Length: 162
Image (cartoon, rainbow, N blue to C red; front, side, top):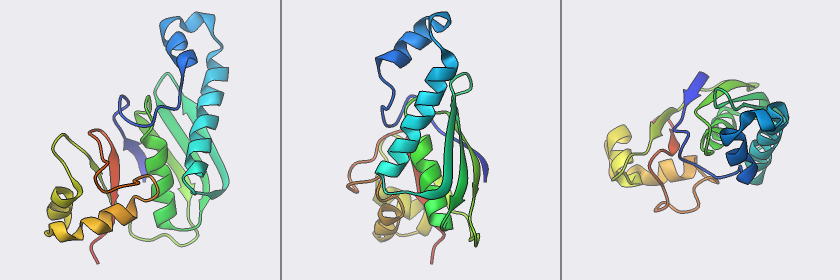
């Protein structure tokens, strides 16, 4: 997949006050340590969503706002969910996909939510029928807890129409 782009101001807020301090006075903090902790926080978030990969490694580079994810996911859907979970974190602008899968399948499309979007409208755009909104909801579980809880800047997986 390569590099996926995200909106760094949107997403899960995993980094606390230390992050704000680092942005204000970078010379006063250990940037390498902050990057390590950020990578660990993102990996913990991915696992909290029930997403696993063999030898999952998550590294964060605060200078470029890039997360690099590596390891081996069980299948294409899990791989894509891991990438979306990593990217839908505040202060992440890009995800460098280094994940592999034993049996690659066709890649999903990705949709960045804009103001006024809902799953019905997104399903109409990609599938020609809003009634297929449940396909998008299911494809983005467990990150989506409710079909009504999407936000601008969030990136969603859009699996191929079946």
